Length: 483
Image (tube, rainbow, N blue to C red; front, side):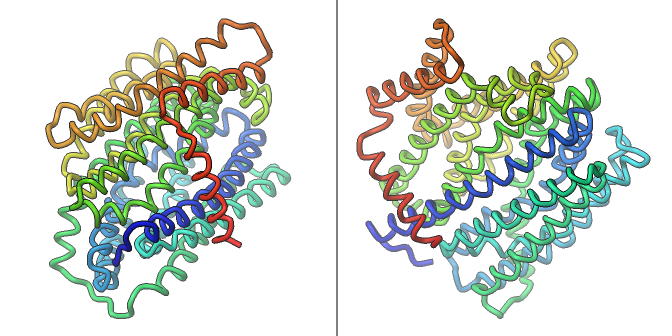
């Protein structure tokens, strides 16, 4: 991959990032709309059942994907001519892994309470694993900075999903039909990715056994990290299914759905920067500049999200899901703060992979997973879904913003991020606290809190005057690239 210098590189990155943001924004709209229709149509108990199926399967996703993507992006960015062989080798390995994942999920399902008809339904949902190999060549979109293809394909999938959910709701069909519809959407998306990504992969494709061993060895820390990360990302829902009820899980999953919507944006932005980081890692000054910019932007955006959501949770839940999901509002006001460490971790993970430090990734995720399980076991029996929400927030923060300070190889990176995280989070907390002392309608509280937060961010130079013009230019380039 040839990396241009200066303005050309910045323009290309911002164009791709902007196009992704527009695409992810549209996809998020369809995803949110589908989630709203689904929740209102299924109700809390059936929504909880549906969510529990995919929460359980998510525990096995690490084995199907095996962390190949970051390694492929890094290696192909440096060896573009080897793309065909590397991708083909990964596809072959992925096929075996996905079949094994499907069998493992079905074998372990009864131990988690999924037996009888529920196990059969879980088996249908698990067929999504088999289309994962078709998605592997999609890494070429990131490497060649053609991310608008991936963004557009994602929009198509979410639009089809939304239409399918509306039809299901109008026909008042049961949960199995929802599972079949989701499987169909996954198949369509995978076929589109395979078809369009292979245009930029050379026809010379061979399975290279030596590279296969290297890929497996280098990807294993990422795969294991993904496994333990999934534990603290989804084990709370599996535990609520077992320790509480599907109705309680329905409220919790509704709150999770809203809080996780915005995780698409840091992933989208970093996908545009990741190939560049892999190449400029040997240039410390440039590397630091990109990481600084990423931390500053992500911390401000995540803190702003917390201010808006925590002050307006009641209205947001009522607007999206109706009064029947009112119990989800307090959960959302807690869960949304976990997005700060999620945004933070996105930068950390990409920086560590670029520096070939992926071997360190299992440590924070293992600590986060263990802490999450212990907290859930302690808090769910006493506080139900509220305890699960606090367990999520505490474990995310401890894993990615505290624990890595213990290691010399990652301490400087975490310290670099905390320089931006601490003032932005304190500014957000102060803004939310200030409006709790004032009696006014909720919309007015949200506006006032955002105003206070904006003032604090400009006063502390976390947001600068030039950021506004850069954001406008980014949006303009994105709109030009997709029209």
